[in-house]
Length: 556
Image (tube, rainbow, N blue to C red; front, side):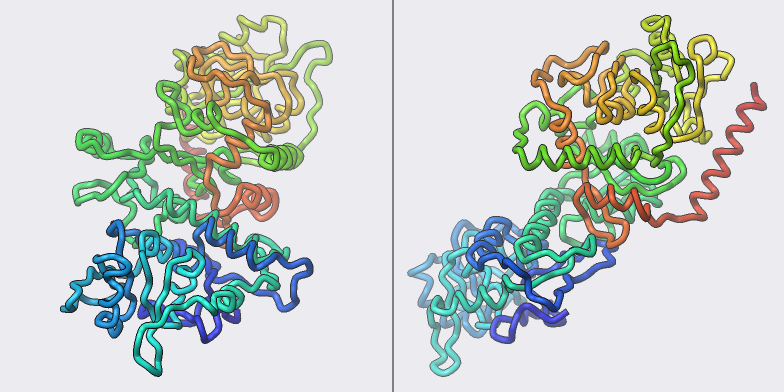
């Protein structure tokens, strides 16, 4: 792609090996797309230059915005040229007595500069009183956007000169407002403002990860899909660890169910902040128990969303968040797309099912993995699927009960199987095959302990009864029989719940480009291509599950 940065303002920093546009894709680990593609035709109805400059200032994108953010002084003169150090002394009295020089090895100078390596240009200009740089340095553009006084060395006189008159030319060269670009996640053309907003989306993600020092408890087969969503802009080669014996700087992202108890105990004892990572609510086409990598995760600094013992970021968002009309409209469209496609957490299916008994109300009971953390923390004392069936039948003696075991249990990988002769004491039908979406569409009600099936049923406007305390209980949308925390006081609309649960809270990875993406991209991929996976590993895992199922039948 041709550079959007002409010779007059192109970056020539030592770490830049080729000509780069001002707006570029961060080097997310494993990403298969490295640069925006500019389309040849001009865009009709182009956005204004002033609008794009303001948007870049608001989102702070452009240049290496993903780079490090070291601790800097409260005020300083930022010098980017070794040759200008002596000349910069005359600016010290005017702009502050602290000088910062990037990038360079330590040198001796009368002003004793502090040296810093490559870092986020927006960060390093945040407290700068002024900038001294080469005319070709792209940091000069960031300074112009932020309004930081800038000086360059005049090539004729050898003295520092104040810049300013050519700012519009700088902006116009770096921000081609008439340009058309290819949406990295699709085939449509987007404008420069869309490009800046996408970079802002990535910046927010990267900034939220900067405090994470490493990750523990992550299975090898999911690391490649999780790492881009936890990347904080630095070296990621040593991110995932089995232990934390080495010095760990910052918080630790943890997949707690797979982490070593000794490691977790040591981290708790040290007071290390732990960030809970779990599968997202639109996960993949295939089971995690079959080693199918996730396309979405949740990342929570307060606690797991399924544990009602303390607030989670999702609960706080639902209790205190504000949802504007554009977000609500986006949530409604996403919900309708998911429902129309028959999309669930692990599968897709839109088959229309006939009712089993024309005279009775049909209730679907969703089974779960009995040792799953959501049951252990939010199950309200219902320790088994058999306990759940007993409770539902007691409450609904005349209904036609349909029981669907959890797919991981059916696959033979997890705990929670109920022998069919015991199920028959409480239910009218056991369904192990097919998509749960089709069953939800057919029944009148859905009863769950903490299962995500309840949330999927709410999206389809079905009556939902909860016996435990799932994240969606307590907001006025379900009939809740479990001990919902008194903290949950707000009544939410269905699309507010969807906006929080699917648009804001999770993180998504596009399986095609390898880039973090909005929820809509993953929904589109799941409805079409699905996601690349290790077919051999998945096949072996499924064979193992089949063997375990046969052994369990033999043991009975």
